[in-house]
Each structure stands twice: as C-alpha cells, then as structure tokens.
Image 1 (tube, rainbow, N blue to C red):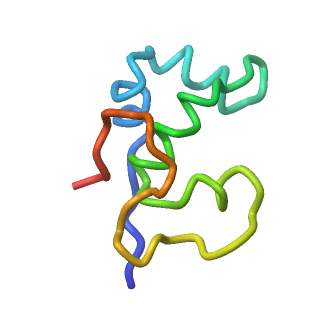
Image 2 (cartoon, one colour):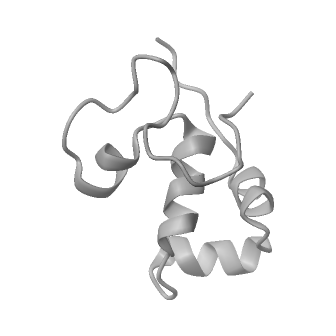
Length: 76
C-alpha cells in the first residue's frame, strides 16, 4: 500500500489552526490535546492507539480509526 503524503497545512486547517500554531504543536512547544491527536489519526487514516503508543497495527483493517470522537474524515 502506497502511503499518501498529507500536507501540514491540510492538517492545520482541519484542526482549525494556523500553520504557525500547528508548527508549535509539532515542535513540542505546545502540547497536542487528545481531540487534536484523534483528528490527526483520522486525517492520516491511522489507528489512535498506534499513534499514541506505537502498539498494534498502524492501519485499521477497515481503513478507519477505531477511536471515535472527531468529525473529520480520512484524507482523500
């Protein structure tokens, strides 16, 4: 399976953040909230558990994120 590159600006916009605010989160200057982590999971199409802990498979067999809570869909 080829991995799709998701531009940071798309993730920032999906989170309702400016690129500058998103960059501060990615650099570790500002911590990500659980909701932001959940949204990133859904945008990237990866499992929440894997993103947070590194445990289990990276991708959900159904191409979705098993952790619910965000209204953002996976990347197109």
